[in-house]
Length: 258
Length: 299
Ligand SMILES: Nc1ncnc2c1ncn2[C@@H]1O[C@H](COP(=O)(O)OP(=O)(O)O)[C@@H](O)[C@H]1O
Ligand SMILES: [Mg+2]
Image 1 (cartoon, each protein chain N blue to C red):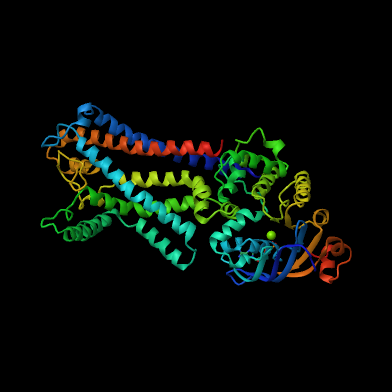
Image 2 (image 1 turned 60 degrees about the horizontal axis):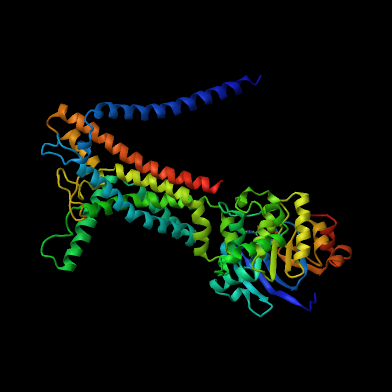
């Protein structure tokens, strides 16, 4: 699919697990800046692997890569050395996991401010303001502003996930990777997070993996369908859901398999 | 009828409660015997004075000093090293065949009888390391190649190191991987993940393990038999290159070597009492630190 203003693009990108499984296979995919792109597909089709490959979290699973992931400024994520990679993860690419991961033993304030340390921001006075602004953007400030010194693990699941989003955006990354961020949340929290995604899209490029096709339609301008590690179809969300060009995509969205 | 379920439940309750009671009874029994038989002999002088020649009079200050110094030197040697090794094994190295070999080697070492460590300590630390040091410095007499507190501490360190590594590794394993991955996603380096995320969560488990291995070391006599503990050195200087007296060994001496059994018994029990108090104190400090930390983690 042709995209004018790309924030990041993958070229023939493959991620291989050490046991030989090809998690995602030769994926070439541009992502439109400041838009939400949904990635859908049956479970095990490589959505998470693709996302983890893009910020190289897959390094932690001893994965090997082929192809490239090119940022707007031309850097290839696959060529970064370990320290450059940390800077990239801290400043350019935020990541939110499927299950909320608050850090145990940290207060809400400490938890959200964790990335500031990685960003080498020494100005202590600024921490509170930054945490406040991140929590406001994540629509969590009103609920937690009077309990910032409570443990982050004491929040509800939905609040924890918004805290994780606040944490991911506190350094204002260009790109936000969300791996099924609502799959462990109740409908009300899901709605809050979806609204949040729509708002964040004004100044972030967001990729969201989802199992929920209504969710893709609600939040994403473009949608990609993955199957068995391959990118089958990539188009505007309307086109994918109303007029899929691939038979497999059609079968998936009408629920013939999942 | 489902009545057998009730029967099993009842049996389960009885057995578990009885076992718990048995444990408490054993501890109580040991403590009361030691206390009853040794209490009369305890005094301020007994704790602070040096022993007389027959060791039936005077006090046990050199033994207390020797034991405390031994445990402290052993901890200084073994705790940082064990922690670093465990961090390397669990956080840095890949979990491949090499890792498996090292882990099973460490488990095997932890199971080696302590007397073997004593022999190893004498052969390796006293003769090889000490001898080499003397040779390198050019001493005519033996200075380092002697049994002494220093080599005893090294030997005890070697004994507790494997247990130490295992307990710290177990504590690190309890921190879920998502916590590490979440840290990496925020841009943390591997070291920052360990320092700011893994370690604060594992510290209570680490402390428990350390306290256990230290008190195990404090109670061992066998490994220091050949390496530095002495039968009778009333004026123990506290210098690392001197021989020393130790509570556990003193108890062994009083129980087996004293010609006057009736007179030795109260000294024996009083010394045992002091050793127990010392070990309990080590344990209590560890437990208090752990408790404070637990509260911090789950406020
Ligand atoms: N840690 C891993 N080691 C080996 N294979 C894995 C690992 N994680 C995922 N896989 C495999 O990679 C493929 C893609 O998985 P994943 O990306 O998790 O799928 P999805 O997120 O779309 O459900 C699956 O076949 C899965 O079995
Ligand atoms: Mg997944």
